[in-house]
Image (cartoon, rainbow, N blue to C red; front, side):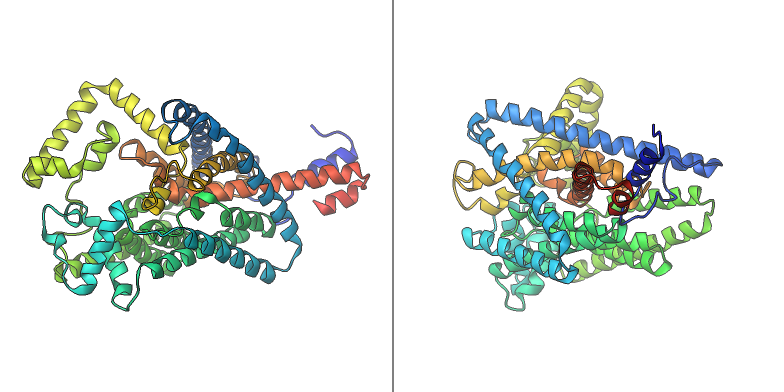
Length: 519
């Protein structure tokens, strides 16, 4: 409680944010009336609780994974690797200091400087390792080369990767467009670096529009030095191009016009062709449309937008299905999985099972294979609920808490990448940096809710996390959650910076009136 004129002024200053002015109309402390307002409060508190639960679970999972891996997998992360907690903390401190120093320069110079830093980091990462396509990325690359040469037939071969993973045809076709123009794999390294630099810039512009310049600069610096992203630079994948499309879809949904929703449906369909996230985005969009319909007490406007989004989305999906069928790349729609139960099998009870061997045992009879997988899933979940729950808990602990090992696809050509330095030092440091970012995100979430209630970013973040309770979950699949996580963390950083400045000014004896203006 605040008592006295000076303390009241101090508390008033606490409620202000230079980018946001006073508390917005979304503040939970303001009185609300009516059914729509009641639903809004319930949804906001539920979404907030779920995000806090995810962040807390991630921190706890990270601690568990650190202990378990140091005991059971010392070749990957031994007790000695705890020494990298210091570089991880120093990196976060560097980000803090740099974001503070760079608050004072012109915006145009700041953006140019961050782009230059991004380019320098990318150049170092690309020049350090002779990256080549490996595992899944090699199959996609080989498919792209064959498409560019006009010799692609794997989409019609039941024993081929591109047949049973038919949703990868989209990214392979995308790569083949550049190969036809004379591009090589080195071009895609440069292209991937440019995409990541663009993502960093989009994150900055997004946070600036929503929260102001100070937290925007924090998130730009944080994203540029985010090791989990930096380690993926030399290996092109559908994660990066997919994230660009995903952020564009969210921005268009937030713009909330007829045209923006229609264009969002088109881009979401393109996203789904490159990276199959369309169903999660669609569910998020439906939730947001219904939420707005109830809370603004006007059903027609949001539902018309939702129908328009759905029409555009399904039309473009159908168009791409037709294009791939006409090109002879496949004999089935790429928007429909040939193995619909496989990801559930990997996610609920058979993490280590290999698809190729299973299909071979069924002589590539997909109908028989799918029927048996469906039966096995039902029997496992109903007859072994405890074992299934334990399996899911272990899987989710790895998904939420383990270091992001998408770098395996980057450095798999450099054997042994798990025991050799500096790669081991980089992913170990990135692990501790990730834990620090989670802690900052916990702090920043409160600041987030000073301005916003439920929005498309939070709904997707929750949906994208919860869906992995049912399907295969690898820590690299967190990639699409990082933008919101970094946004939360940047708000946490800005909160600490503001409170540190206030403390310093109070120690210096600055009058309350001036302190209020500074805040």
